[in-house]
Length: 200
Image (cartoon, rainbow, N blue to C red; front, top):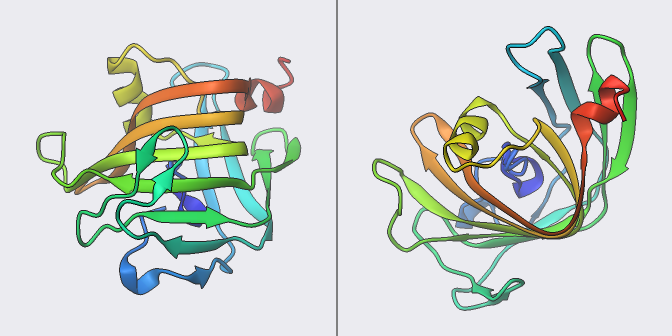
């Protein structure tokens, strides 16, 4: 979860691909640190390769939202201290590189995006659960935990996907970190792994 994204990733942001969600003490600050993450496309196959993502331009700012603030998709901001709802907006351009071939693509992945939390975790053993919403253009990187949880829910997504439109993902946070549990897109998507491998 980078720039308040699940790194997920879901970090988030990269979550979310998907960064660990901001706490109240981290709110209202500009995201300035260079962020590099690595994920595997086509894991456990002969076509596997690592893909790394780095900031090219990061002018995003994350702000804490008051409980009850409307969020796109019909959601409302909720807290589950120490997790607080956030909105992240501003220009974000990232590069994505196939570490085997060196092929790189650059995308505007500015969103914006929102995190909101369930007042009580909805997954047994989770520290927190919630909903991630993004609109506009974005990217999502899915690590092994997210891929396994999505597969268990009957959802197949590549390790890297580019989306346009409104994307809603449910997520959980446990002692190992955050991971995505559902994926619902009203818009279009591109398979980033296929783009980087030259298959599309």
